[in-house]
Image 1 (cartoon, rainbow, N blue to C red):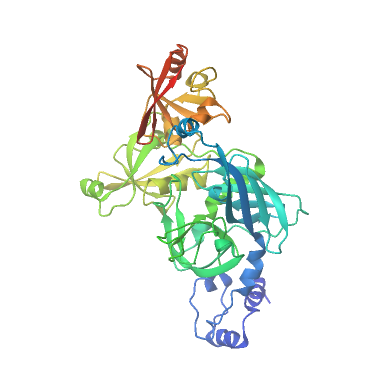
Image 2 (cartoon, rainbow, N blue to C red; image 1 turned 30 degrees about the vertical axis):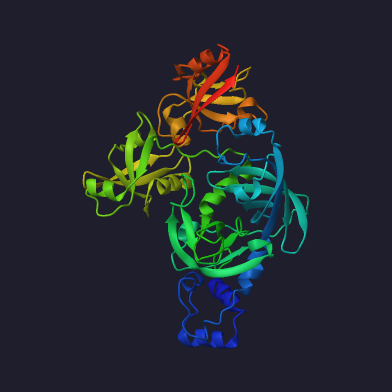
Length: 479
């Protein structure tokens, strides 16, 4: 008997007699890959059981419990208000409170590497994380890597024998709408639960804040607590990490979203190798196509990514992209907007070359784009600010094109916060990466050198204007 036939017999070995006879009679002992794409041939054959798949996949799905101290929020102010700590101190409020979170995770390496969502484990600066396996064993875990934009976090189990059950990745580009899937997680904290459904849609990018996302949509019921759990195919392989639902009540309405495995694998590889994830730099600004833009460009549909600006000597310019081009495909995959373009580039990786198809003045052009890392920030473009001033502890850079692209900021020129040191004055003021320093006193800030000079003046009253997204706030504190 050939290897493929043996594999097929093993695959159907758990079927009932009626289902097996039905398959024999109808000649459906085809290769496994073809079987995965076919509907049940009869009522008898529809009596399939997911039990063999669950037995294979469920042991690698864990419950994740996180606990940490978070800052108390002054009443009446939004959670992202720039200067919440200042008001909290003035109101005499306690700074910390204990917060807990519950979710799921997936073991993807036998030595205890776990994938989950950042929003599951980020509950404070000193989070304590506990994972519970399907066999009820419990272990502490630590965060190895986390990314808020993609909502991916990588954990590593502390202790154990290094022989944990794990799931294999499947190529998420191979899944199709209509494929059967299982969602495994811990909804509402009731314990490990398995639900079934199909792939409802692919390439959903309008969900969440990530700028490189392309979600898998499924109708397999996903509820609070499922976050970080597994979405698996009928071979028990991981095709996505469940992360979000569309719901007005908090329960499942049959619209759930999973991060594709191809993106997750990048972060797992980074955690295993210790190499920092670097996203390719396009060297261009992209906007999604609205109905109005499509009509203005005489496009037959509102899909694709409009090139609005091309940076001189960047990868896009070298490939021949021009302002006004509409990117429609990357390496043969259709792209619906700017986010899916960024997703395709990110999952291909630095050092690769991709084919980009674009519409230019009514005709299609095909270009070869070399994926390169962003150029390093020069020593004259960045400063670590310390001293007796409100920006103590902030790392701030000139807003050069590749920094603006990486932080998804439309402005060019000025200065932007890259990071904030824990426990610093800047952290107490709730400064965040991406905040733009507009002015200090009466001085408009155009560079880090100019910012240094303004901070050296030590006024009796600090007046600093900061922009975060569309929010602009002026801070005034005694010098």
